[in-house]
Image (cartoon, rainbow, N blue to C red; front, side, top):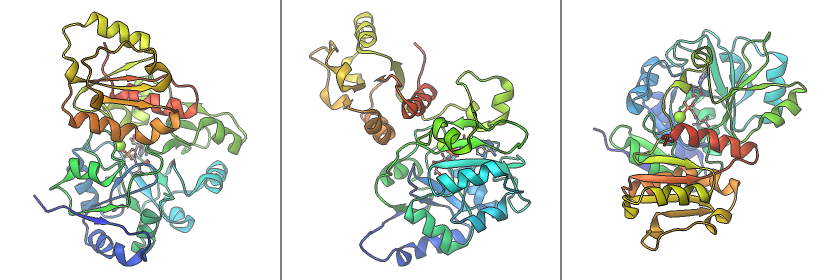
Length: 346
Ligand code: TXA
Ligand code: MG
């Protein structure tokens, strides 16, 4: 066990001096949790095999699940990919820095432990100032998966990182709550002879990418063949799951039906996430505890708060989290993708 320090970044002070400790730790082969604009990441020097091994150990992550390599500028990016095709240059031009991860053929400099044994590497340039500056000062790419224990929801604030990794890492940089709240869009563009495929939907949508590239691309379906699973190793594991059972519903009618048919349920052990419009139609028994309730008023609001709310409700030690959600746009589909992976079937 190590003592986990949290350094709260003060944005009104100069940033560089507040990053010194993190830089020193990373230089010496340690791992540090850092904010990005999407979710918090657990970072190590992507070129240092021993440091990268510590990430897998702290998270309890299977070693065949590859990590995203974060860079601070295009020159750095060029060093770690085999070559950049025309399509990837367009995407970089339009979306970097930001919440988009490109899967490309890796250069020899990236060790196989970072890519889970694959010949491709996932690369992203975060727009978060703390992450960008850290990489710049260190002058090394940072391998960073989301800073949760493997299988848990991604952390969107320093407290949620602490909950999962306390005693396992030396430092968390606290940059406040993340702006986006969902992980980056991941697109496989490594094979120039095939159509690019979105492996993980996110806030940067298929339509935006198609507009940028001027061609139609594919989005991996929820029901994957074995071949697809091998293509994206992370997809085969259960994800984003709280301790409580998360059950997904389309409408308040479905929830009403569920509650009416499960009268033995202890209502104090149930929590609920629901859209404001649907909430009005819900027949909630009086004995339902309001502290177990989160009513959201837009898809955008839910995206930002989803993971932190799920963690908050989980801390109340409920048995079940009922979630009502229908995707109505691309962001909705990204949320739905996470909810599906974290839910149990009824
Ligand atoms: O927003 C994000 O992407 C956050 C922040 C910290 O950058 N990171 C993140 O990393 O979500 P992680 O490790 O939790 O998710 C990365 C996903 C996994 O599903 C992994 O399997 C996939 O990207 N991935 C990484 N490298 C890959 C590769 N070479 N080929 C296919 N999939 C890859
Ligand atoms: Mg993750």
